[in-house]
Amino acid sequence: MKSLLQACAFAAVILASPISFAAPKVLNNCQPIVEPGAYVIGKNITASGDCFVIAADNVNLDLDGFVLTGNGTGSAFVEQLAVGRKGLSVRNGVVTGFANGIFMLNSTAMVIDRMQFTNNSTSGVHAGDTATVTNSQVLDNGSGIVLGQRASVSGCTVNNNAGTGISLNIGSTATGNAVGRNGGTGIFMAEGGLVANSVSRNNQQYGVLMDCPGTVVSSTVSNNLAFNISQPGGSGSCDEGGTCCLVIAHTSTINSF
Image (cartoon, rainbow, N blue to C red; front, side, top):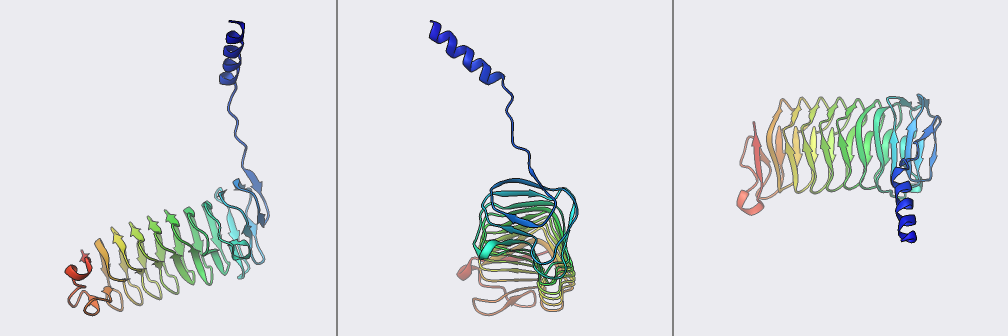
């Protein structure tokens, strides 16, 4: 009985104790990030070359509304020695003036949310497979968003980039985006892609250019200098002025509204 009472008392102490979580580490300067965990930017930061070199998996980085400004070179976020990482999260801030906003093409399962990438000369976001970019603005960069396979871009505004606005690899989705006035194609999708509930207008090349099979549905694609929607493959190029990629042979559909 005594042992049972002691065990119950010990359990009560544990239950009564508050659960504590480590506070995010505050970053006030560019530096390598070598440990997983939570980080928060503490002030506006100006970089010369690369800013945050990611050398760990599962890094959660909150810019807390601050601005990372480059000198025209390097990347705001980059893999250490091009070694791919998993689970990087970047959110809630501005990245401007670098060669690349994010340059982590070997890294997977990244989450980028509520960010603004502007005036980065080579690319705004360049990341690997299963990356997700949401609720962000990607404006006036070299290229806009370039992601690997099974990636997702949603709720983003992607305008006035010198090259392609959104470029996604096999099996990816682009939903709810506003894309326009890019110097290349508005949205490029590799095989098995889906574009839905999006607008792609006034781009210098195609509005949507996608491999076969792929689907564009419930979207406005207009006023682009090349075909608004083009899907090479099957019996020939598919565009709004001709016969679309054969549904029977390629299980593809294109519906432009």
